[in-house]
Amino acid sequence: MSGVYCADEKRYEKMKYLRCGNSGLMLPRVSLGMWHNFGSVDKFENMKDMVKTAFDNGITHFDLANNYGPVPGSAEENFGRILREDFKPYRDELIISSKAGYDMWPGPYGNFGSRKYLIASLDQSLKRMGLDYVDIFYHHRPDPDTPLEETMEALSDIVRSGKALYVGISNYKSEGMRKAAKILKENHTPLLINQVTYNMLNRWTEEDGLQDACEEVGAGMICFSPLAQGILTDRYLDGIPQDSRARRNHFLKEDAITDEVIAKVRKLKEIANDRGQTMAEMALAWILRKDRVTSVLVGSSRPEQILDNIKMIEKLEFSDDELSRIDEIL
Image (tube, rainbow, N blue to C red; front, side, top):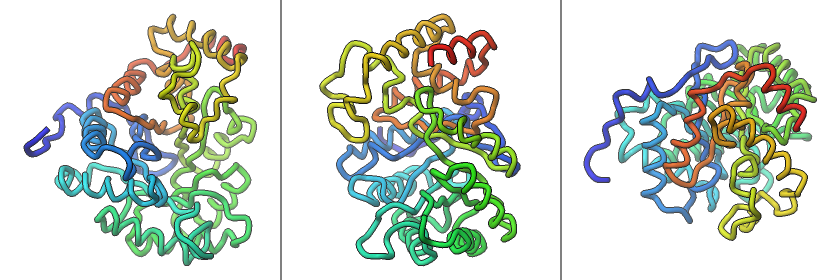
């Protein structure tokens, strides 16, 4: 693709949006995650096509972290280049998020939740992306050793400094989230959102009461790994393909794909067929059921996958009968 990029004029007709918690911010029901496929080892033109495809279809939210790559930092650098080359006119239509909390550079200040680490990391992220501010800045995981007050006050100061418009947390359970939200509220920088893993095969947030806690504190919820790294698609129904994530052994281990799990997916697929959806579309729609989750983060390795995933927007409703059948299978 050459020439100047002009976004599709009908992009906002193709997506649904939901208010994030008690804030004024609307998020697309589908957001693009850059955990995989945006690093220094990946093809730049493909990344660019994915971001354009996402935005042309109303996906306004692009989710990064300091260490996304490989190598760490390269996803932000690549996204920064895409912004410079094609998205300058559209900055105010984009929600760009980054995070700090996992290992980023050597030594005691490149990890976890100290004020030193969070502020330094965001400065580095802004530089890599060529931005003055991010829309959402997350603390990426709870830190057992740094006082929560220090971490949350650093987030509040980041908002006051103008380097982030909103703050979020990631991988926090309900008890930790309630405490974090209380401190942030006292600092007049409310908690916008909690980003956690959630899918049909991993329902810990329900047992933990996280959805209730989000509603209680007025925060939104956004979910990653919605397809359980590909298990909730047709991909593994006939064995493990050579080029799959399970074979490459990134984060999905082959032993996660048991006969029992595949049997469940086959039964779920029957319900999806009855709904006129693919297995993946139904798995994504199920997460957004009853609007308890604000947005679902999809990863992608090519533009077509993004188009496949957003088809589920056409059918987000489930009957009570469908939901109870799904619960029985799971």
